[in-house]
Length: 436
Ligand SMILES: *[C@@H]1O[C@H](CO)[C@@H](O)[C@H](O)[C@H]1NC(C)=O
Ligand SMILES: *[C@@H]1O[C@H](CO)[C@@H](O)[C@H](O)[C@H]1NC(C)=O
Ligand SMILES: *[C@@H]1O[C@H](CO)[C@@H](O)[C@H](O)[C@H]1NC(C)=O
Image (cartoon, rainbow, N blue to C red):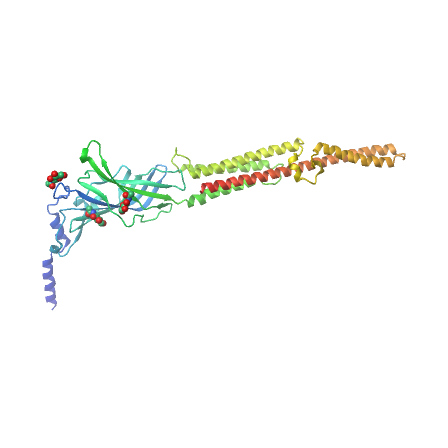
């Protein structure tokens, strides 16, 4: 029984001739991989192309190139690589080394700076279908030129073209055509860039002076990368905004106004330095000679705001100093806010006020003096009184001076508060504009 089964199996296999090896021997007998595989010279070989990004490896903004691992898939019909599956035990598909089969003289042109193959050409494998259909897919690392549009950085997106063509054959012999793909997105996502599905376009390019025969078929794949701006927003924009907001708050803070202006200026200058360093960090990543991008403009704007607020603070400190030391009287426009002060009440100005005050005190005391005029110590009393009056007047003047100084301090505090609100509003506005 066992021997009978063995006999059946053995005899079946003798008939079938089904190994790939037999197909190989059959189709590669007399095959020449140097010749375009058509039986009529007139026949055009149509080559279907597909393209997919495996992953984005590098985007170099300064040297303007992108490096990516991509995957090309080509298919065409080889009229010599055909067999009848029935003769080979139903073998419909075999694999062969790419170097043994004719391949279209495929090249990535003009935009490519360098290509590296994952697998050397000698070891690449392609598949052959019994109808002569050949499919050939290979991954390569492509360093592709990509002009960078940085105006909107970090909200920018870049588009690069990968152009493929056949070097040797004009479109009369080898005609490239794009084959629709279900998934045109990248296989692996990138943390910094969002890779958009690519688009395709076909061109017929005429090589100069070649006439009708010199038409080459080119397929352009356009790849768009959109930058994810979150990193730049949280690591550069928000801290810059906070630094500026804090320094504006510090510069216009209403603490002791007399001696600490200096400190505020120092604070402002430190902030300017910090912002300048951040700005240089941002511009370092950009190709030089292009317009300053949105992020750069934002930091520059913050720098200008801080500079202006420091300048304003210096101006206020200068005026405050003058107002206190040069005995400037309080302008009438500020008087409404000091109702308790006679000195400044209504339209009477400071010096007139003083005179009135002096007259009032003089009257009181002269009445006192009259009542006691009969006594013997009249003259000495009078002397004492006038001295007392002098002292009183002096104290009063000192008081008034103090009040005036305080009023100036209050006025400048208000100016400070106004400037603070003004600059903070500009600061917020610039952040909002930068974020759109
Ligand atoms: C090749 O094509 C040309 C026209 O393009 C035609 O005149 C000629 O007969 C064709 N030759 C064959 C062998 O089919
Ligand atoms: C290439 O393959 C696609 C399907 O994947 C097919 O539609 C197309 O006709 C093939 N092209 C050639 C030239 O064989
Ligand atoms: C790219 O190819 C698809 C088919 O996959 C086609 O529908 C589309 O129109 C092509 N895009 C362009 C810009 O020609």
